[in-house]
Length: 184
Length: 164
Image (cartoon, rainbow over all chains, first blue to last red; front, side):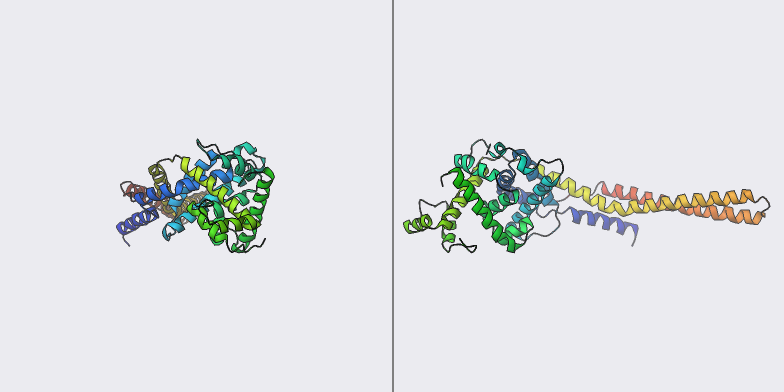
């Protein structure tokens, strides 16, 4: 192999590694469709709007750096949520991060410019009393409509465990809502 | 309540997804949900979470997609550079170590020669030649690897970026 061939191979390898899973136009459309739901997931399960913003951007950057081929938008979106879930988990595991149980309930108040009154007054205080995994599972199942298998894939848990964990989380939330006296 | 769930849950889910629950639901289904603790709990949780999602999605302003795109391109490029340079750095370190060993060997040989003033000229010449050969080989190795790194960086400069 001549030096020129080696150099061309190096360049070609670099360009192959540089190919994103989608081009910029495809990404812009995908981003438009999936960024808000992803932000909502991160913000409502972490209770931290600024953190959700940072993690959302980081999730998209990491998503664009993958070399695994993605089979369609559904798979891509699920993979994106998986990256975001892992980022959230890493954030909570980091020593500097406060324990999610220590955060004041007020952080879970929906502080968007316009927010559903029921969501703010009823759901978020109840959510604040639940574990992060429970919040994530409930959000993925009920807000995003993921199946048990998809939830297992996103959260990195066994599919057989999801049904029972979700059942318990839903019961717990329902009891908290009942206690708070929230209206359906 | 069972883990498998009430059989009518799917109907309620469909109506919730379409935004038709409970107003556009049949009276019979509404009556069932009122009487079925499991469906009632499930419908309430799903309605609240969907509402929270809709509220968050509706009001969120996004950063431009282009910014994220270019951040990702920079990171991909950096990762590709790291992948190519890593073996070259290992080779440079190995060459440096070889050079250090050669210098140490030469110094050892020279000190031996100095301590053996009665050694013949041919022995001294052999030691000197061997030392020179080793030093030259080490220097050539370091120079060639450094040249390879420099050329790789030169080729990297004008190469095209990813799509978009």
